[in-house]
Each structure stands twice: as C-alpha cells, then as structure tokens.
Image (cartoon, rainbow, N blue to C red; front, side, top):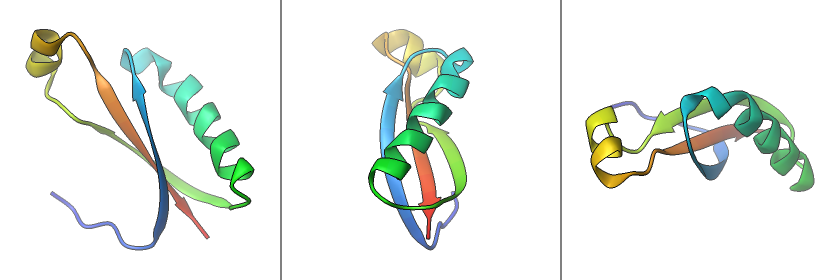
Length: 67
C-alpha cells in the first residue's frame, strides 16, 4: 500500500497491459480537456492476474497527478 498526496484525475480502462500506451495517450487528452497540466501518471491494477482471469476483466486505474 502507498499513500498518494496531491491533486489527481483518475480514469478506469479495461484490457491487456499492452494497451498501456493508448491509455496513457487518452489520459493525457483527458487531463488537457479538464484544463490541467499533467505532472505524473500511475497505473494500478484492481485485481490480481488470477482474479482477472476468473472475472474475465482486467481493469486498470490510471491516476494523473495534476497541478
């Protein structure tokens, strides 16, 4: 576990990790639409690989630290 401090925008994506580049681009666009400046991005899986297989979904939350 970790504690994040600051201001963040979040967005949830679904699919294999190979789509991370596309998700990052979409997140950059989302942050810009909100009129914010992107500082950093963090990716977090909501389930372990075995659970993702069991549920049939692989959700990833992208945290965008903004100004």
